[in-house]
Length: 304
Ligand code: GRG
Image (tube, rainbow, N blue to C red):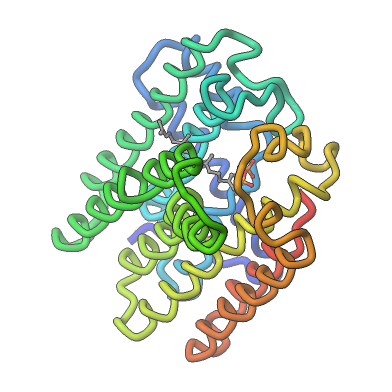
Protein backbone atom coordinates (compact mmCIF):
# COMPACT_ATOMS: atom_id res chain seq x y z
CA UNK A 1 0.00 0.00 0.00
CA UNK A 2 1.34 3.47 -0.95
CA UNK A 3 2.13 5.44 2.22
CA UNK A 4 3.34 8.90 3.12
CA UNK A 5 6.43 8.92 5.36
CA UNK A 6 6.02 10.34 8.87
CA UNK A 7 8.39 13.20 9.65
CA UNK A 8 7.62 13.90 13.31
CA UNK A 9 10.74 15.99 13.96
CA UNK A 10 9.49 18.89 11.80
CA UNK A 11 6.90 21.50 12.82
CA UNK A 12 3.95 19.36 11.92
CA UNK A 13 1.39 21.60 10.41
CA UNK A 14 3.79 23.37 8.06
CA UNK A 15 4.94 20.01 6.73
CA UNK A 16 1.31 18.98 6.28
CA UNK A 17 0.58 22.25 4.53
CA UNK A 18 3.37 21.59 2.01
CA UNK A 19 2.01 18.14 1.30
CA UNK A 20 -1.53 19.50 0.83
CA UNK A 21 -0.26 22.21 -1.55
CA UNK A 22 1.43 19.52 -3.66
CA UNK A 23 -1.78 17.53 -3.99
CA UNK A 24 -3.78 20.68 -4.72
CA UNK A 25 -1.39 21.60 -7.53
CA UNK A 26 -1.71 18.10 -8.91
CA UNK A 27 -5.53 18.34 -8.77
CA UNK A 28 -5.53 21.55 -10.82
CA UNK A 29 -2.95 20.18 -13.27
CA UNK A 30 -4.99 17.10 -14.18
CA UNK A 31 -8.38 18.87 -14.28
CA UNK A 32 -9.58 18.73 -17.89
CA UNK A 33 -10.51 22.40 -18.43
CA UNK A 34 -9.06 25.28 -20.48
CA UNK A 35 -5.61 26.51 -19.38
CA UNK A 36 -6.92 30.07 -18.95
CA UNK A 37 -9.52 28.84 -16.41
CA UNK A 38 -6.84 26.81 -14.62
CA UNK A 39 -4.68 29.94 -14.34
CA UNK A 40 -7.51 31.83 -12.68
CA UNK A 41 -8.37 28.91 -10.41
CA UNK A 42 -4.70 28.87 -9.40
CA UNK A 43 -4.83 32.63 -8.75
CA UNK A 44 -7.27 32.08 -5.91
CA UNK A 45 -6.11 28.64 -4.83
CA UNK A 46 -2.43 29.49 -4.36
CA UNK A 47 -2.47 32.83 -2.65
CA UNK A 48 -1.48 32.00 0.92
CA UNK A 49 -4.50 30.21 2.42
CA UNK A 50 -3.80 28.63 5.79
CA UNK A 51 -5.20 25.24 4.66
CA UNK A 52 -6.80 24.80 8.10
CA UNK A 53 -9.44 22.29 7.00
CA UNK A 54 -7.22 19.74 5.22
CA UNK A 55 -4.54 20.18 7.90
CA UNK A 56 -7.05 19.12 10.55
CA UNK A 57 -7.93 16.03 8.54
CA UNK A 58 -4.26 15.33 7.96
CA UNK A 59 -3.67 15.43 11.71
CA UNK A 60 -6.39 12.85 12.29
CA UNK A 61 -4.93 10.57 9.59
CA UNK A 62 -1.50 11.00 11.15
CA UNK A 63 -2.80 10.24 14.67
CA UNK A 64 -4.32 6.97 13.47
CA UNK A 65 -1.38 6.03 11.28
CA UNK A 66 -3.54 6.15 8.17
CA UNK A 67 -1.74 8.60 5.90
CA UNK A 68 -2.23 7.65 2.27
CA UNK A 69 -2.00 9.91 -0.79
CA UNK A 70 -5.55 9.01 -1.85
CA UNK A 71 -6.87 10.11 1.54
CA UNK A 72 -4.98 13.40 1.44
CA UNK A 73 -6.32 13.97 -2.06
CA UNK A 74 -9.84 13.60 -0.66
CA UNK A 75 -8.97 16.17 2.01
CA UNK A 76 -7.88 18.64 -0.66
CA UNK A 77 -11.51 18.71 -1.82
CA UNK A 78 -12.25 20.52 1.46
CA UNK A 79 -9.84 23.28 0.54
CA UNK A 80 -11.43 23.49 -2.90
CA UNK A 81 -14.92 23.86 -1.44
CA UNK A 82 -13.64 26.42 1.04
CA UNK A 83 -11.94 28.40 -1.75
CA UNK A 84 -14.99 28.48 -4.02
CA UNK A 85 -17.00 29.78 -1.05
CA UNK A 86 -14.49 32.61 -0.53
CA UNK A 87 -14.61 33.60 -4.22
CA UNK A 88 -18.41 33.79 -4.08
CA UNK A 89 -18.46 35.41 -0.64
CA UNK A 90 -16.22 38.25 -1.87
CA UNK A 91 -18.52 39.13 -4.79
CA UNK A 92 -20.34 42.48 -4.71
CA UNK A 93 -23.68 40.62 -4.38
CA UNK A 94 -22.39 39.13 -1.11
CA UNK A 95 -19.71 40.74 1.06
CA UNK A 96 -18.24 42.94 -1.68
CA UNK A 97 -14.59 42.60 -0.65
CA UNK A 98 -11.87 43.90 -2.95
CA UNK A 99 -8.94 42.19 -1.24
CA UNK A 100 -8.30 38.64 -0.07
CA UNK A 101 -5.02 37.27 1.28
CA UNK A 102 -3.24 40.50 0.34
CA UNK A 103 -4.30 40.49 -3.33
CA UNK A 104 -7.21 41.91 -5.30
CA UNK A 105 -10.12 39.48 -5.39
CA UNK A 106 -10.74 37.68 -8.68
CA UNK A 107 -13.79 39.77 -9.57
CA UNK A 108 -11.60 42.90 -9.28
CA UNK A 109 -8.92 41.41 -11.54
CA UNK A 110 -11.41 39.98 -14.07
CA UNK A 111 -15.12 40.59 -13.64
CA UNK A 112 -17.99 39.43 -11.44
CA UNK A 113 -19.61 36.95 -13.81
CA UNK A 114 -16.30 35.34 -14.60
CA UNK A 115 -15.34 35.13 -10.91
CA UNK A 116 -18.66 33.43 -10.14
CA UNK A 117 -17.92 30.91 -12.90
CA UNK A 118 -14.38 30.24 -11.68
CA UNK A 119 -15.83 29.71 -8.17
CA UNK A 120 -18.21 27.14 -9.66
CA UNK A 121 -15.35 25.47 -11.51
CA UNK A 122 -13.43 25.12 -8.25
CA UNK A 123 -16.46 23.42 -6.70
CA UNK A 124 -16.56 21.16 -9.77
CA UNK A 125 -12.91 20.35 -9.25
CA UNK A 126 -13.72 19.30 -5.67
CA UNK A 127 -16.31 16.89 -7.02
CA UNK A 128 -13.90 15.67 -9.70
CA UNK A 129 -11.21 15.10 -7.09
CA UNK A 130 -13.50 13.06 -4.81
CA UNK A 131 -14.83 10.96 -7.69
CA UNK A 132 -11.28 10.19 -8.86
CA UNK A 133 -10.26 9.04 -5.41
CA UNK A 134 -13.40 6.95 -5.00
CA UNK A 135 -12.18 4.96 -8.00
CA UNK A 136 -8.65 4.72 -6.65
CA UNK A 137 -8.84 3.90 -2.97
CA UNK A 138 -9.33 0.53 -1.43
CA UNK A 139 -11.96 1.85 0.93
CA UNK A 140 -14.97 -0.36 1.54
CA UNK A 141 -18.13 0.69 -0.32
CA UNK A 142 -19.95 1.67 2.89
CA UNK A 143 -17.12 4.08 3.80
CA UNK A 144 -17.16 5.59 0.33
CA UNK A 145 -20.90 6.12 0.67
CA UNK A 146 -20.39 7.74 4.05
CA UNK A 147 -17.76 10.10 2.61
CA UNK A 148 -20.05 11.20 -0.23
CA UNK A 149 -22.95 11.59 2.18
CA UNK A 150 -20.89 13.79 4.53
CA UNK A 151 -19.68 16.04 1.68
CA UNK A 152 -23.25 16.48 0.49
CA UNK A 153 -24.61 17.13 3.96
CA UNK A 154 -21.96 19.46 5.32
CA UNK A 155 -21.11 21.56 2.27
CA UNK A 156 -24.66 22.10 1.01
CA UNK A 157 -28.01 23.43 2.20
CA UNK A 158 -27.79 21.61 5.55
CA UNK A 159 -24.24 22.88 6.00
CA UNK A 160 -22.07 25.68 4.68
CA UNK A 161 -24.46 27.04 2.03
CA UNK A 162 -27.38 26.94 4.50
CA UNK A 163 -25.23 28.91 6.96
CA UNK A 164 -24.57 31.54 4.32
CA UNK A 165 -28.31 31.82 3.66
CA UNK A 166 -28.95 32.28 7.40
CA UNK A 167 -26.23 34.93 7.47
CA UNK A 168 -27.97 36.81 4.65
CA UNK A 169 -31.36 36.63 6.38
CA UNK A 170 -30.40 37.76 9.84
CA UNK A 171 -32.63 40.81 9.73
CA UNK A 172 -35.62 38.48 10.08
CA UNK A 173 -34.64 37.60 13.67
CA UNK A 174 -36.12 39.75 16.39
CA UNK A 175 -34.87 40.13 19.97
CA UNK A 176 -31.36 39.83 21.30
CA UNK A 177 -31.76 36.41 22.98
CA UNK A 178 -33.00 34.92 19.71
CA UNK A 179 -30.23 36.62 17.75
CA UNK A 180 -27.56 35.07 19.92
CA UNK A 181 -28.78 31.51 19.45
CA UNK A 182 -29.34 32.18 15.74
CA UNK A 183 -25.76 33.44 15.49
CA UNK A 184 -24.35 30.17 16.88
CA UNK A 185 -26.60 28.16 14.58
CA UNK A 186 -25.43 30.24 11.62
CA UNK A 187 -21.69 29.92 12.33
CA UNK A 188 -22.02 26.22 13.14
CA UNK A 189 -23.30 25.80 9.58
CA UNK A 190 -21.39 28.44 7.63
CA UNK A 191 -17.95 27.78 9.11
CA UNK A 192 -18.27 24.85 11.49
CA UNK A 193 -19.59 22.22 9.13
CA UNK A 194 -16.51 22.24 6.83
CA UNK A 195 -14.23 21.96 9.84
CA UNK A 196 -16.35 19.11 11.20
CA UNK A 197 -16.26 17.55 7.74
CA UNK A 198 -12.46 17.56 7.77
CA UNK A 199 -12.43 15.60 11.02
CA UNK A 200 -15.27 13.26 10.03
CA UNK A 201 -13.79 12.39 6.64
CA UNK A 202 -10.39 11.61 8.09
CA UNK A 203 -11.94 9.53 10.87
CA UNK A 204 -13.96 7.52 8.32
CA UNK A 205 -10.92 6.99 6.09
CA UNK A 206 -8.75 5.99 9.06
CA UNK A 207 -11.39 3.53 10.32
CA UNK A 208 -11.47 5.22 13.74
CA UNK A 209 -13.54 3.41 16.40
CA UNK A 210 -16.92 4.79 17.51
CA UNK A 211 -15.74 6.19 20.85
CA UNK A 212 -12.84 8.10 19.31
CA UNK A 213 -15.04 9.29 16.45
CA UNK A 214 -17.47 10.82 18.93
CA UNK A 215 -14.61 12.57 20.77
CA UNK A 216 -13.20 13.87 17.49
CA UNK A 217 -16.64 15.03 16.34
CA UNK A 218 -17.08 16.99 19.55
CA UNK A 219 -13.62 18.51 19.06
CA UNK A 220 -14.62 19.44 15.49
CA UNK A 221 -17.85 21.13 16.61
CA UNK A 222 -16.05 23.27 19.17
CA UNK A 223 -13.08 24.00 16.91
CA UNK A 224 -15.45 25.12 14.12
CA UNK A 225 -17.26 27.62 16.35
CA UNK A 226 -13.97 28.78 17.82
CA UNK A 227 -12.55 29.43 14.37
CA UNK A 228 -15.43 31.75 13.40
CA UNK A 229 -15.54 33.58 16.74
CA UNK A 230 -11.80 34.31 16.39
CA UNK A 231 -12.42 35.40 12.78
CA UNK A 232 -15.05 37.86 14.06
CA UNK A 233 -12.62 39.21 16.67
CA UNK A 234 -9.87 39.61 14.06
CA UNK A 235 -12.25 41.54 11.80
CA UNK A 236 -12.51 44.09 14.60
CA UNK A 237 -9.05 44.18 16.18
CA UNK A 238 -6.86 42.37 13.63
CA UNK A 239 -3.96 43.75 11.63
CA UNK A 240 -4.90 44.44 8.01
CA UNK A 241 -1.44 43.63 6.70
CA UNK A 242 -1.32 40.25 8.43
CA UNK A 243 -4.90 39.43 7.49
CA UNK A 244 -4.39 40.44 3.87
CA UNK A 245 -7.84 42.06 3.73
CA UNK A 246 -9.45 45.19 5.14
CA UNK A 247 -10.68 44.91 8.72
CA UNK A 248 -14.13 46.14 9.84
CA UNK A 249 -15.74 44.49 6.84
CA UNK A 250 -18.40 43.00 9.15
CA UNK A 251 -19.22 46.41 10.57
CA UNK A 252 -19.42 47.89 7.06
CA UNK A 253 -21.84 45.12 6.04
CA UNK A 254 -23.75 45.42 9.35
CA UNK A 255 -23.08 41.75 10.05
CA UNK A 256 -24.18 40.02 13.25
CA UNK A 257 -20.96 38.70 14.75
CA UNK A 258 -19.66 37.54 18.12
CA UNK A 259 -18.29 41.06 18.56
CA UNK A 260 -21.52 42.85 17.66
CA UNK A 261 -23.42 40.58 20.07
CA UNK A 262 -20.98 40.27 22.98
CA UNK A 263 -18.30 42.96 22.51
CA UNK A 264 -14.61 42.12 22.02
CA UNK A 265 -14.04 40.99 25.61
CA UNK A 266 -17.19 38.86 25.61
CA UNK A 267 -16.18 37.27 22.31
CA UNK A 268 -12.73 36.52 23.73
CA UNK A 269 -14.34 34.77 26.71
CA UNK A 270 -16.49 32.69 24.35
CA UNK A 271 -13.40 31.75 22.33
CA UNK A 272 -11.59 30.67 25.51
CA UNK A 273 -14.56 28.50 26.56
CA UNK A 274 -14.75 26.88 23.11
CA UNK A 275 -11.02 26.20 23.21
CA UNK A 276 -11.45 24.51 26.61
CA UNK A 277 -14.36 22.41 25.33
CA UNK A 278 -12.37 21.34 22.27
CA UNK A 279 -9.42 20.33 24.46
CA UNK A 280 -11.69 18.45 26.89
CA UNK A 281 -13.21 16.48 24.00
CA UNK A 282 -9.74 15.16 23.17
CA UNK A 283 -8.91 14.03 26.71
CA UNK A 284 -9.95 10.37 26.27
CA UNK A 285 -7.66 10.10 23.22
CA UNK A 286 -4.49 10.74 25.25
CA UNK A 287 -1.22 11.48 23.45
CA UNK A 288 -2.78 10.60 20.07
CA UNK A 289 -4.51 13.94 20.18
CA UNK A 290 -1.45 16.12 20.88
CA UNK A 291 -1.30 17.70 17.45
CA UNK A 292 -5.02 18.43 17.36
CA UNK A 293 -4.72 19.96 20.80
CA UNK A 294 -1.84 22.13 19.63
CA UNK A 295 -3.78 23.17 16.55
CA UNK A 296 -6.71 24.43 18.56
CA UNK A 297 -4.26 26.76 20.27
CA UNK A 298 -3.13 27.97 16.86
CA UNK A 299 -6.79 28.62 16.02
CA UNK A 300 -7.42 30.43 19.28
CA UNK A 301 -4.29 32.59 19.09
CA UNK A 302 -4.00 33.18 15.37
CA UNK A 303 -3.21 36.65 14.16
CA UNK A 304 -4.38 36.13 10.57
C1 GRG B 1 -24.73 30.85 -2.92
C2 GRG B 1 -25.91 31.20 -0.68
C3 GRG B 1 -24.69 30.78 -1.46
C4 GRG B 1 -23.60 30.37 -0.80
C5 GRG B 1 -22.28 30.06 -1.41
C6 GRG B 1 -20.42 31.95 -0.17
C7 GRG B 1 -20.73 30.66 0.46
C8 GRG B 1 -21.32 29.57 -0.37
C9 GRG B 1 -20.45 30.39 1.72
C10 GRG B 1 -19.76 31.33 2.63
C11 GRG B 1 -18.94 30.60 3.62
C12 GRG B 1 -17.89 31.48 4.23
C13 GRG B 1 -17.18 32.46 3.37
C14 GRG B 1 -17.60 31.34 5.52
C15 GRG B 1 -16.53 32.10 6.21
C16 GRG B 1 -15.59 31.11 6.81
C17 GRG B 1 -14.24 31.71 7.18
C18 GRG B 1 -13.91 31.88 8.60
C19 GRG B 1 -13.38 32.00 6.21
C20 GRG B 1 -11.96 32.34 6.42
O1 GRG B 1 -11.28 31.10 6.41
P1 GRG B 1 -9.72 30.98 6.58
O2 GRG B 1 -9.26 31.90 7.65
O3 GRG B 1 -9.19 31.54 5.19
O4 GRG B 1 -9.39 29.55 6.73
P2 GRG B 1 -7.82 31.23 4.42
O5 GRG B 1 -7.53 32.50 3.68
O6 GRG B 1 -6.74 30.87 5.39
O7 GRG B 1 -8.12 30.10 3.48
